[in-house]
Amino acid sequence: MAEIFDARLTPTKGELVEEWVVGQRWYTGRGRPRLRRLGSWRLDDPAGEVGIETIVFLVEGDALGSHGPRGRRDGAASKGAPEPVVIQVPLTYRGAPLEGAADGLIGEMEHSVLGHRWVYDAPHDPVYLERLLALLRGRAEAQSGSVSETPDPGVVGHPHPDWGEEPQVASFRVLAGEQSNTSVVITPDEGRSVIMKIFRTLHAGENPDITLPEALGGSPFVPAGVGHVTGGWERADGQGRDTGQLAVAQEFLDGAEDAWRVCLRQAERGTRGTGSEPPGPSFHTLGQAVAGVHTELAAALPTHAPGPEEVAEQVRRMRRRAAAAVGEVPALAAHEPAIRAVLDAAEAATWPRLQRIHGDLHLGQVLEVPGRGWVIIDFEGEPLRPLTERNAPDCTVRDVAGMLRSLDYVAGTVIDTVGAGGRSVAAAEAWREEAVLAFLDGYAETAPDPRDLPELLTAFVLDKALYEVVYEARHRPTWLHLPTAAVARILEGHP
Image 1 (cartoon, helix red, strand yellow):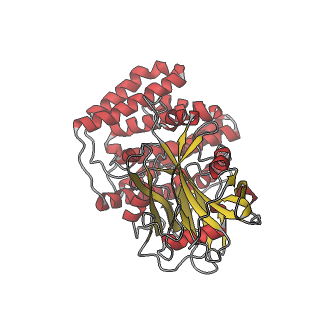
Image 2 (image 1 turned 90 degrees about the horizontal axis):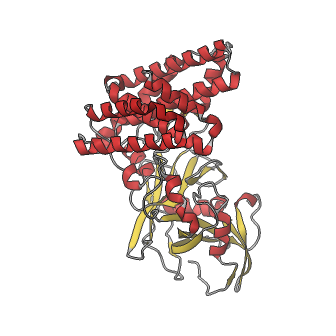
Image 3 (image 1 turned 90 degrees about the vertical axis):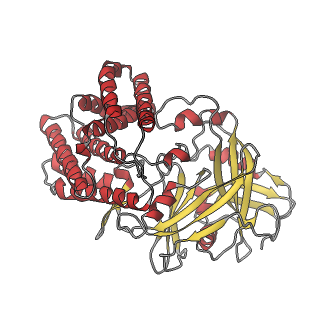
């Protein structure tokens, strides 16, 4: 067990992290934060060479004020004080630079006992990955971050019972582009590869990215589980402790390609007249996969019929997102009467039973796996929404609407790429219509047909498009024409 020294650090760990965190994609504040330590725990390196510590920080200061509005799904400004933001920062400390890990270097410090130390973002360090896997699989024990040679019983690994082999770290790569977490693909010398996801923004309670795949254990539509880690930290107000989920590991699907790239390539070939496979079979099975996940979740987890107030609250959120979209793009004000009519019809409609759903479903959350077909990943939902919302039962039509909007984005992207020629536009629109119909036909083979709920289907597709208006206006204005054109098309009766 590692000894914890009473040492002076220059600069301190907090100072190093405060400067480094601003450049990380998963950090949602703006500007350098003040960080307050809420807790820490350690893992032992059997060789005794590498210090391994995970620190949980509360984000304070001016950076926190921007987190609330930026993180809202509906794009509206938050009322009152923003919610506390808690982040997880795993670190490794080394007496010499780690070869090939320059991208993970946080900084250097002087340790009054151990001398000069190089400090790394731990997911870039193979020793951390091996020990975290050992903890997750029940082969290692977490240690206190403040007392030498003392276990921390509040940090626990939960191995998945169906995973057979013990994963080893022969090689690894940290994936780029993640925003709410850090994902690392770990490859052993023998056996299946694993993807480890370290959550960066922590929430008390169950994370749906763990709960839902575990409920779907054995399903062909999700990756197999390896295990997860839970842990605790001091509450932001100092009144007790919170417990949440810190990391999860699943099988990594070698050779898989995300559905966005598959669809974009297929649509481009068809639009250019170079030939493509008919979209029907692929999207038909994609619809079956989404319906299969919905059916299995309904069987594994509680469902309930929504009451009038629950329906009204769902529609109130849609109205807030519509108002936010009009605020970003005033030209949409001309559509306000039609938007109101769609949402009024949805509130008056008969809603199906609510259940757990994916919550953030689009083509980027689906993989095409050779020899296996479509597999759905990333059940975290909108990561910056409160965890209570993400864990609440919802309407399956929301997931369907997300896929339909994603298919529309493929067609719009192709039109932008090949130009606005009449034949190209017509071909892309025809591809979209065939893909949408095939997806819905496949979904209806396994689950209730969402076209039998036309008021809800239209409302959820419109709601998703209005959310996209806000997002594109704020982050990708050159894409804004895609959702604004969709809003007009939906309101003309073509959801």
